[in-house]
Image 1 (spheres, rainbow, N blue to C red):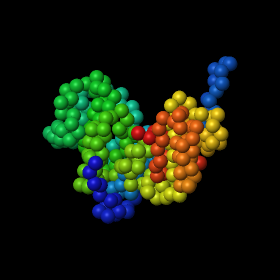
Image 2: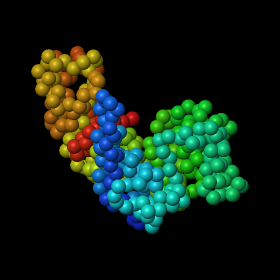
Image 3: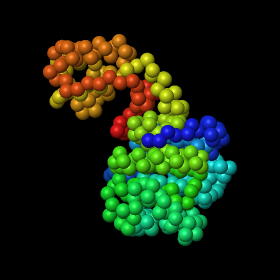
Image 4: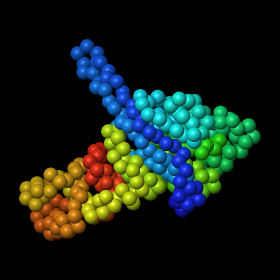
Length: 338
């Protein structure tokens, strides 16, 4: 990945997107006769954010945290119950149609482009954004080459693999330059080469044009790698907002210990049974956040005693954004580590 320009140095601290008190509740739905209904859900609860020019700002949280609902309101596709969204001086709540003129949005679904070829999808997007035919085709060709999609240009998007489809839709987003890119889990299904191409393209536009990116993700590894700042969402609320390094300082005095058992944890070993209440269990894997001395003691216990024969692997690591999320009281189900 290329070295990114720090947003505060070249691009200043001016705010591109200001969100204040944004609230959205999905109403309760009655079930059919004899079936339970769906209770009301507050998807966003008085959310407030500032996204600065030239930065990659992330929304991190598990599935159901309210990330995609928030993004749909920022892009003018959904009206909030309360609150304001200002993007580059435009009131998106009052004038949602203006969003398409100032931002490019890559949602989780791309069915609108499925029947087009990769080439036509990119060209058509450019034309819809006001480019003349020649300019749209020039930008199309440049973007497809940049992302390594030239050989797939004549293929219908629906016939591509999942990662290729996602990359083709990202290519369309880049044609007809917009100052704000809103990307909802853009690299889902991509291989490492494609992911590298995506973030290299983003870096290039940040350095050359001051492009701002709002990224939705539940991938903690990607978040730590690419984000300048991140807002952590849980149950529709922002529970923290800072740089990844700043957030990890909240749990700087802890070590993450991961134990992977061959089949199951040997709960007949008292020392292992005593750890269970403090472990986050995921199949054969236990994850614990411990003080450094405790971590050393746990490793000594499981590698030097009766538990060793049941142990498949173990790792010690400094805290990740997942650890921060847990420390803040969030529910880590749905967060992805790779």
